[in-house]
Image (cartoon, rainbow over all chains, first blue to last red):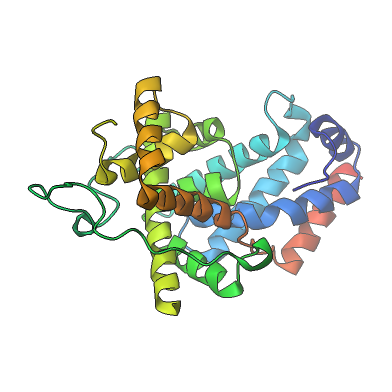
Length: 207
Length: 78
C-alpha cells in the first residue's frame, strides 16, 4: 500500500493507541491476509477467523515488534503461523516439502520433435496478446485469473499469491513457508506458467 | 549461439526473472532471446502474467469483524 508512514512510526502509533492508524492497516492489509489464510485452511469462515486472530495478536503483541523485519513481514509471520496451526487442527496439511512438481510447463507438442531440422523450437509462436487498455486489466481478465488461481495446487498457489499478488519478497516467502529458494522458484515457475496458459486460452477464445 | 532450444528456454524464464542464473546460463538465455521472437513473446507474457496478478483486488474483511477489531484495539490500547 502506497503512502503509509515508515514502520517505526506506524508501530509507535499503534502502541500509543492511534485507532486511525490501526484502521488504515486493517483496511489495507486484511484483503491480502484473507487470501493467504484461505490457502491454509478449509473454509472462508476459518480464513476470516485466522485473520481476526492475527489482528488480535498484533494488538496484544505490538510491543514485541522490534523493527528487525518490516512491520508487514512481522504481521504475515503471525498470520502464517496462526493459519498453519489452524490448518493442522482441521487436518488440512499443506505438504511444503514434497516435490511432485516435475515435467514440462508448456505442452511438448508445441515444439518440434527430435529429428526435425529445428528440434525443440516452436512450431508456432505463442499468439500475441492485445495490449491492455490504459494499462489496466479488464474485469473479465481479473475473473479468469482469480478462477485459475483457485485451480492451482496449494503450494503453487501459496507461493504465487505471496510473491505476485501480495508482492512479498522471496526471502520472506522462503521463511514463511519454510521452503528453499530453489523450491520456491520451481513452484513459482509452475504457477506462473499455468496462469499464463489460462490467459492465452482466454485471449485465443476472444480473437 | 548456444544450444539452448525453445523448449528449454521456457523452463528457465522464472530463474531469469528472479536473477538466479549463473553468468554462463544467463548469457545463453539472453543469446537465445536475441534471436527468437517466439521466446521473447513468451518471456513478455510470463512477465505480464506476474504483473497482472498484482492488480487482483483483495476481499474485504466483514464489517462486523472490522468493528469488533477496532473495539478490541480501542479497549486494549485506548
